[in-house]
Image (cartoon, rainbow, N blue to C red):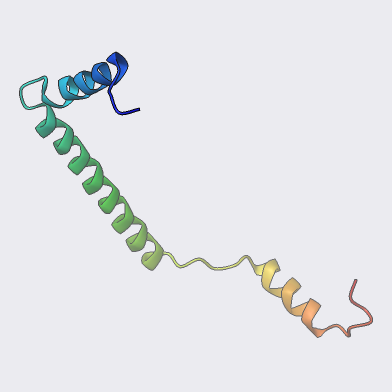
Length: 78
C-alpha cells in the first residue's frame, strides 16, 4: 500500500505531459475557459434584459380559471 505501482507512475507522467507538454498549453486552456465564462455572463445579461423588456403575462384564460376555482363553494369543488 505504501509504494506506487507502474500504473500510478504512468498516470502521473500522462497528467504531467498534458499539463506541461505543449508550448502555451495551459494558457490556451485557461483562455478558452475565460471565453466560456464571458459568454455565459453575456448570455445571462441578455436574458435579464429580455425579461425586463418583455414581462411574462399569463394567458387570458389562465387568470379566469384560477379565480373561478377560488370563488366556488367548497362542496362544489372536484
